[in-house]
Image (cartoon, rainbow, N blue to C red; front, side, top):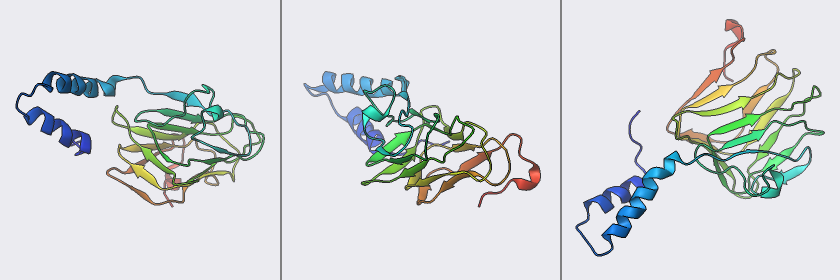
Length: 196
């Protein structure tokens, strides 16, 4: 995997190429902070609304109550016991490394992610691989829906437990980015391995 060119990378190279300046020690300190940012722990939070239409960008809708997943390698768990089909509006650009979807109840309700006001969903990870997973085995006929543009900036594994071919995760928005999607269905019969 090659180095991805980014605005941060270009600025870093420019800072390193500068001659000494009275502010250089401060710049080097800032550069050191940026270099260690990749090792900071990712946020890991769980959705707490069991039904209705709610905003991803509202910390009160997450168990922590103080944050919402929105960073490289962050983990978003939207896999609780829903009492009705939830709709989640992103309302702004959101980045995660892992998105876990699923209803822990046997009466499975599909999760719908909408763009809301200017929402996009980006998958990116410091570890090199991002994940979108259906974390529970569900009744057939239920499909989680992402009505949002999706950008893939790390290889994306999509993991689905196999029940039958009548359920899944549907991406209705534009999909873009530098990497592809790898489908993982550990117990799926070979004859059913297709992406539609």
